[in-house]
Image (cartoon, rainbow, N blue to C red):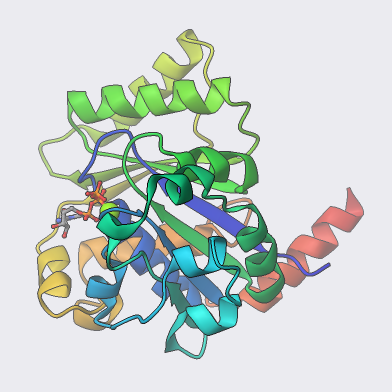
Length: 271
Ligand SMILES: Nc1ncnc2c1ncn2[C@@H]1O[C@H](COP(=O)(O)OP(=O)(O)OP(=O)(O)O)[C@@H](O)[C@H]1O
Ligand SMILES: [Mg+2]
């Protein structure tokens, strides 16, 4: 079976930057010629279609409830990048459908079609987030460098531990300013996890607070297009590309996903 990578982007607290991270990481990975699917799993308030400036006619609901073929449901952003949008009329989804939502068969199909699947979740621990915990290869816990958001990130790690998550956990501390002592914060987070007996993050990444985020939003375009050299773009690109290698980013690497994938296969065969 071909290799694929499923990355679930979650947070305890809302508004911490999950959608920005998911959208731009997906675009950056697709830029490496990896077939990439971005799933907007924020059923009620998903707005990836706004970030991408597209008008979807179908949504994730059509796939998981009506078993509509995935290829007929996605919006093509570019030859390597598809979006499975959130429903445009979430208030019309009845309770029975909501409680029956499942990502399982969608992810099986997505893994067969795409090299990388990025899932943008609603904040908190919702049904689709819980399901993704069991199916993802990596879970990005996005937080801000402030106490309530950190406390909620610890809370999410508690859930991930209790739920028996096997995926690698990547802590992403977003909107870091020069006045924040990011390395100390990351290390404190690790220590808290250790003391509480929680799954510790495999990696901790800081993303700067950067006006490029607002510029990209205003133009409904990706950071790489709007502000390719901005500090946020550079840091996010490094993190996104690190998802393609188990060891993290190779500095200055320009290898495509396919060659990285081949290296991973060879490495696994040697084990
Ligand atoms: N590094 C950053 N620098 C500056 N602004 C940022 C940064 N990251 C995110 N933002 C801004 O913060 C706001 C919230 O981001 P976003 O919608 O991605 O968060 P979210 O976690 O997906 O929210 P929700 O929980 O509602 O889904 C947006 O206006 C976004 O542009
Ligand atoms: Mg969001």
